[in-house]
Length: 358
Image (cartoon, rainbow, N blue to C red; front, side, top):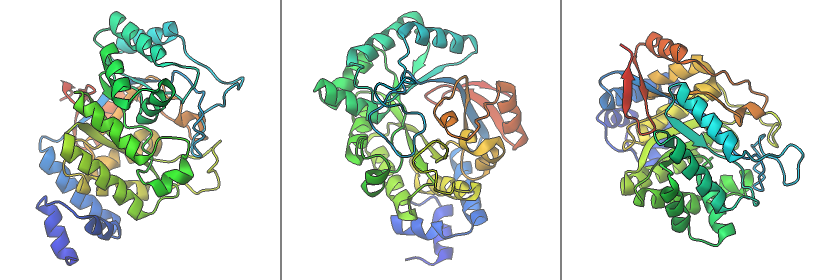
């Protein structure tokens, strides 16, 4: 193991970290990690631009058989609170998104056994037929794996049919922590680590991009965080298909994990900084104002992040907990980025800049 000074030099020179070195950095004080991550961000983004997207999170169903312990949004089959959105309702939501100047439609839902693959195909094709300009960034790996199982198709066949219907890219949801030890406790009814990886690698092979995410701050240990980072870094080495890495923390309230203490913002910032240092092949790292508040979100821009997420027209999942989500307007997002010392820019799903706010 290198001395800490040698390790700092290695980080500042942009050399690749080992898992052991990452665990060593995890023990560092917050400001040291923040400094190192900020230097790494400046190497990748010397122009000092921080991006955001205007999107809408449409949760087409809350009926789910997965039973994840951290989820307050899910409803069991037959629940009077369960719902499935009709195609007409979704189309209305997309029309509203575009009238706001939005570009990205994020659709995710529960693992609902009553929804066949044809529901998804018809939904996407109708969206593209009516609104060809919208970028459909939808359906997480667990949804794809579940569809493959109930339809008795391969993951590749499901993704190919969704792409043919008009799916543009996949969100990284459902990753939580990519460690079987953690997933066996948190979400045993959802796809495993290898299946999550297979979905994203297959999507990349088919020409689609995706994001990688991590939901932490519950039962994981530092080695699980590093295991997760190592896996997504390796996938990115192999495919180059991830556009961004997006970490956020568990929020309690109406979940099976409400006895846990939520992790403080300092832990979030430490993991954010470590993510920037370890994921040397990811250009974009998002800071989460949704789970951390805008005040902490903009601090994250000095801990390695170059993106502040989205101006969301709708958010239902985190709002199902006891945490009150505050969604900024475009002018608020621009002002917060500017006040943190950066140049704000609106982007699209693929992190292409659409508008600079000089």
